[in-house]
Length: 230
Image (cartoon, rainbow, N blue to C red; front, side, top):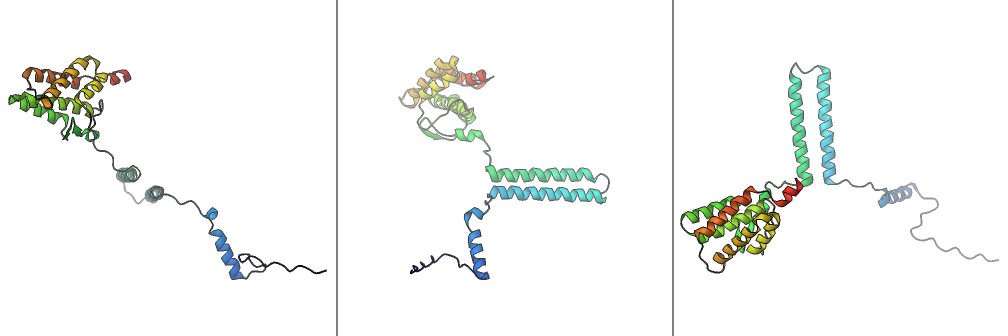
């Protein structure tokens, strides 16, 4: 009976009696696989962990000072203030790292294009511009600025959001949903704005006074949504 020759072992098959060096290489190769690798912490996690460890070390150091009697009378208050201050600073640093720089002014999001024009003025600036124009007898400009002041004011209050394509009447309709008693006055104000801004109409003192009264009333009135929530 003739035995079949043994097939050669695959090239990557380890020898049955490996040398010490070969065994070490095989172990390193096995341990380098993904399942043996610990999860890598994120940068914010590392920073938070290190700050926590630093703060704990600070507490331990302070405790050692108290336990050793190295501090004199009245020094405990100073230490507590220092620790609280450092803790606040550390919390602020972590907050900036994790959440970024806070938005300093919510009103800044409401600035920009307004009824076809780029305009970064706030509602107060627009209202004062309208008053100056009216004082000079230019009621056309006064009406334009007053209506823009109304729109910018409601945008700053996050009652109505204006976009580059928002029209005067579109704004009036949206604002009327939050101020139903002022719906008619808002529609009239939008007509007056379109007349002087696009149709070549001349502004009148009567129209401006009516628009100024509307602006004052809206500024002092809570929107319908706020009343429902209350």
